[in-house]
Image (tube, rainbow, N blue to C red; front, side, top):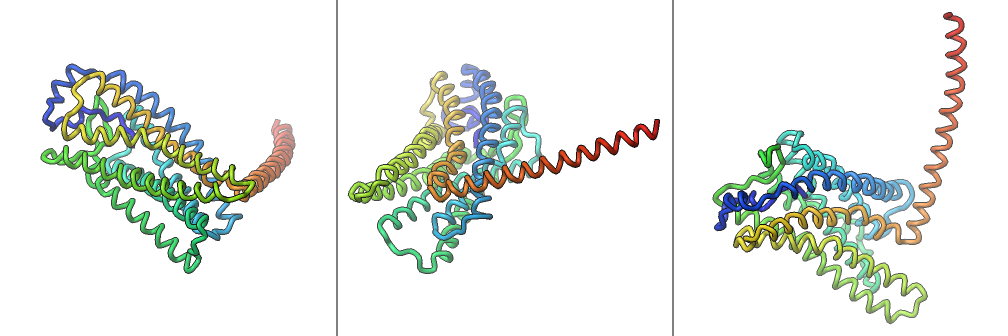
Length: 347
């Protein structure tokens, strides 16, 4: 998750960060985070909830889950929704400090990690399923049982990754206000922090990225050789999926990995470099989070059949709104006449 946490929080390193804090002031970075993060979280919450809720609604009312991709898309939308539901808590945390108690600190931190990591793994599952479908590898035998077993494995793996959040997340005094931050044992703070950040980078970025690159590059080779009028559109979709994943995830994970290495070896001793890294961490982590808002567009709405379901859902919602408005107006007219009669009688 994104917090206003900075390098000086890890003060048990070979480099003396206590004296470093006196020399390197970061009040402007914290002010930026206290304004930028709540605003960004608000936009991401509204956009992401709308898009992913529509995906869940379509699967619930219209589209039957006939393929593994359908199952993965539904689980991906649920993971994104649960991730987005934590954003109001982090918005308040960035703006005024943590106000929700120790238990909610642990639960919200764990939920963020579970759903962020599961979302990345479901993206890898979708790419594998599409790879097998393009290569016409039969995976229909007991597909429901196998598919839900894979989904269960993804959720369990993500829950395991969230154990450190449940164990170590605490409410700490940080820059004059309370904050929900990990509090590792002092004798192993460097090792644990670096290990957890590297583990999350490998499981939530490196492995999914390698799977996606392998699958989509193999699919692109097959599509290039296929004489089909829809080939160019399919290639554009592949490029959009991989490109958006790299744009949103690569900068954040590169900086996260660099910070993990710096925690152990204290590579950064320049104040301006440290300030820049802290600022980039706020921006790139927000970019990575915004991928949960783009998933419905990239994976669901690009399909022609899914577009028809979206149109049908919007039309049905519009019809329902018109009927509701008409009924409210009729009730309002009746209510007004009734009130006028009562008022004149009372006078």
